[in-house]
Image (cartoon, rainbow, N blue to C red; front, side, top):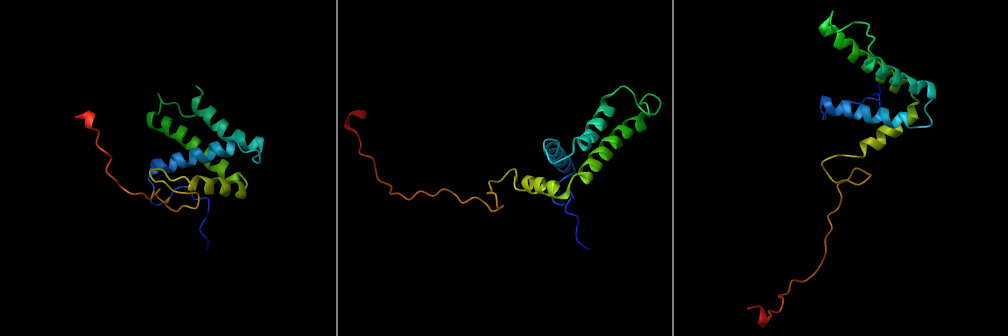
Length: 132
C-alpha cells in the first residue's frame, strides 16, 4: 500500500515543526487561486470560532474541555481544509515547502550547495618604509 503523500509530519521533525509546516501549507493554499473560495472559508470559520466570544464548551464551566474544543476545531478545520483541496495543488505546495531546509544551504534539488572556491596565489605585500 502506498504511503499518503499528504502526510505533513516528518518523522525526523518535531511536533512544533509539523505545526509550522501545516500552517505554512494552509497559508499557501489560501493564496492559491486554484483552491475554491468556499473551501477557503473552512479555516477562516475555524479561526473565527476560536476568536469569537461564543463557545460550545465555555472555559469557566469546563476549564480543560473549554480549551480542548478550540484546539479540536482548529485541528479539524485545518485537516479537513487540506484534505479537501485538490491533490495536485497540495502536493505542489508540499514539494515547494520541502525544498526549503532551514539551517543548511541547499539548492532546489535538495543537494548541498557547492562552496565558492577562488584560486589564487599568496604573496607578501611590499613593506612600506614610512609606516615604521
